[in-house]
Image 1 (cartoon, rainbow over the protein chains, first blue to last red):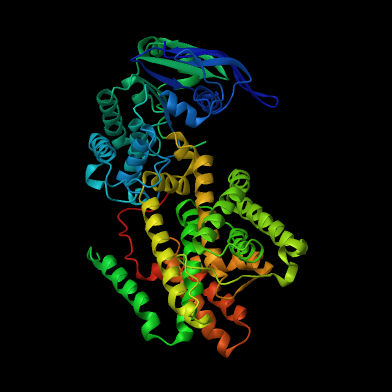
Image 2: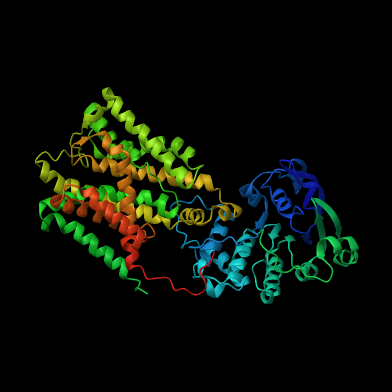
Length: 257
Length: 323
């Protein structure tokens, strides 16, 4: 059990976003969290990543309570996340972006007078990740000029560079054209294996992606866990199909919230 | 693409020109180089905060004032006249002041950061103005000619001292400050500052502790401002509270915009052009601020990259530049 949440509740004033959510993520699991807009997915992610303290309940990562510990401490502990809206450093090159992540992971950020260019370990690792994500030929380009799909990959790649044990991907393929979604996922899953990342949690609307890659699916509805089961069992669950997936409909290309 | 040797060649040319200037140029222009070199040091530090970390301080005159008053207090009150000691004490005093001020300011960003630095600057200005027993109030204080490298340079009259030993001393300090800053921006620390400038949320998710880095940048920048302030005062031989006034902070921001904050060398160019332009404009038209105001407006609208931005090769647009 790498990540465990017990009876999480979160309220914004009178509005209850999470109403008693419990879940656990084991090692080497790929878990998808699905649910309609307003189901509490974003709040759940923020609570699971220590960005928001739960009103009630506990989140434990490797046995340690991480409620509200914040992003920096979370990254140190070995959990990384990406965002629904792509987050890049517009004026940094692809290589610099990845180097920054390596520098942070190795705790070398406060080396004021060391030469970054002379740090071969940092350079080599950044290049290795660029290679893994197919960004090596664009390593010298500033992130802002990359096409949208590459920006998304760079965002994920920089999080992977931290070599986390678990990563939480908030809509990894949102904003990526339908044709490219599978390519993005293939790169991502392949890189995860190579980097030694153990568990992946994703929030995703595209049901092809969800059913194509998950070991387990957790369906949220109105702040509660509606179902937590294998893809086959979820597909057979009439309530989930009705309330979350929709009959015959794929919820691809959901609007950004 | 510019060839790789363009920057080193340009630097060498500028360096040689700076070394030869006292021998070739009219004395008046040599004395104008002194404030340029002092502001050059200030701006290198200011731009670590502005260009590299993305924080605009409107209160940097606070630290310039600390540097300048350090020299005055040491030479007049305490009888310590070694420039090396003055620079060291100025740097330490600025670091001590910047630690709490910075710790508070870096919790805020954008206009709130700017306003808070402005507020601290005004507090210090008022202190200088009102505590006249210590600071001399609006009259300010005298600053005795500092000894350079342990020597009084007694055989030199004031002008000879300034265009000779003091000129080269300032040049050496500026060169050293430039070298150190060059290393800082090219270090892992410098890279982390740029991630914070571009996207603090993403930087934090990569484990970079944003407030701490901003705080360090703030302190380095304050130390630079104080060293620059300590260099600025001796040529006039007097310090007064206007050194710490907010319009002086405004000039610092102006110089950086003029030269271009996106470039390492932009601030130095900005300081140079500002000093010489100010001199030229003042000699023909007493209301130089009027002209500079217009220049600033034109800059912001037509050349937001400053003078260096006019030289920079444009980035190749490879795809849509959204997001």
